[in-house]
Amino acid sequence: MLLETRHISKSFGGVQALKDVNLGLEAGEVRGLVGENGAGKSTLIKLLTGVYHLREGTVLWDGKAVSLTSPAESQALGIHAIHQDRTLIPTFDGIENAYLGLDYPTRHGKIDWKAMAARVQSVTESLGLELDLRKTAAALPPPQRTCLEIVRARMRECRLLILDEPTAALTDREAERLFSVVQTLKKNGTAILYVTHRLDEIFRLTDRVTVLRNGAVVDTVETGSVDRDRLITLMTDSVPVRAASRRRTFGGVLLAARNVASRDGSVHCGELYARSGEILGLFGLGGSGRTELLECVYGCRPMSVGTVELNGAVQTKPTPASSLQNGMALICEDRRGKALIGDLDVRDNILLTSIDRFAVGGVLRRKAEDAAVRAQIDALQIKLADMRQRIAELSGGNQQKAVFARAMMTAPRVFLCDEPTQAVDVLTRNEIHRLLRLKADEGCAVVFVSSDLSELLEVADTVQVMRRGSAAQRLINENLTAQQVLSCCYET
Ligand SMILES: Nc1ncnc2c1ncn2[C@@H]1O[C@H](COP(=O)(O)OP(=O)(O)OP(=O)(O)O)[C@@H](O)[C@H]1O
Ligand SMILES: [Mg+2]
Image (cartoon, rainbow, N blue to C red):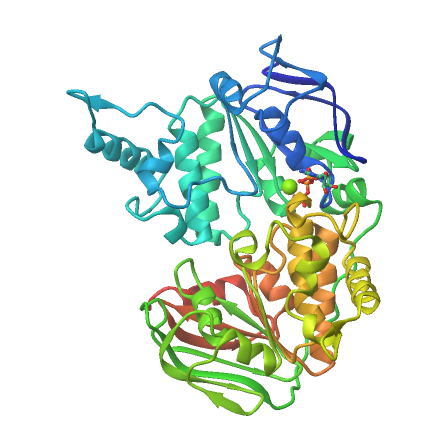
């Protein structure tokens, strides 16, 4: 046995995040770890990687008890993790980030930057990844940051690689590369602990799967011996209800973006129109400009040409304030970077854009605010100890739910959602789909970006394809297949 945990527990104040967890991992095994948002997955990982001190329970490595009181100790054993909250240094470039915590090579007493660059480049290529290593981490889009973290993990000897939601926001093609990296590592005898809410990945990649519920291990089963519904039942005790079926008839156009180009060149000729009652799926490969187009339309990325017509008002320079005022909400992909303020509590984060609604003559109505926030927390089942808790203390999926809750609070007519279900568990994912459908049925227009094509085909009435920053085909989702959509994404 490579790794064994015995009676591991962890609590934060009054919240017991892990209870008496026993887990054994063999070398060369790919183990899935699943459970609802807040079940304790990331906490377990942080204990194994020395981010949190292990105070209750023991960890055996190669059969011997080890102390894990710092990340350095854990790394020295060969344990590496790609955390759910990515841990790159924003101002460092790819090479410096890959070398984090490693000794820099020197030549004649000076840092040998050339050798560093060559080493990182060769690791990147050996993984089949394409990355601009000169860019700072802050300048990379989120999927590329994940790739950079994988490169970083591969720079060291790695006996156990832990992946916490690695494919959130990765496109299928990028995910494929990641899967082949996992297969290669497995062949070399590395153990993998793989956390995801995308159950098809569990079935595709893992040998066994461990289910956590409320901090305790429910069971560990052979992946081949269970199906999807069984796994969901182990996690939650209930089976998800599918969102209502798609629509065919729509009202008037609520949002029309025409000929949009961004000043930075990431969008050349973006087109988007969404009608009342419609859920429009926006799809494209990584780098095709989906996120950038939404940002232009919302007004948080400068546009050089183009128009955005919202509820009949035409604008050439939308701003977030004008968009909000005209009834448009953006749920953005980068929840930690752009959407949430980590030091504010959950309540204020949810109220952030709707606070005006609760002011009468400049005086805030606290009780009404509390009630409105509480309603959202209940509807989305956000797991927390108190709405006055710092949002950074919530589990990843529960933070994502808070971003969604905030958009719901402003009662918009047009929703722009960029990966709204990333990191959320199966049941909540369905709940978010259901709520968006409900909004569409009430007459709103919804624009939905997901790098998970099967999800997109499940929810969207219409699919707008983007290719290299420009609008490509617009397809009606009637028996549409993934193949058909993908073939529009590649140059013909
Ligand atoms: N630093 C912290 N302070 C207080 N509570 C915390 C902290 N970290 C985690 N928790 C709580 O511990 C519980 C488990 O959280 P954890 O992040 O391990 O969940 P998870 O299984 O990774 O969920 P997700 O799928 O949403 O990522 C949650 O109730 C969370 O709010
Ligand atoms: Mg987590």
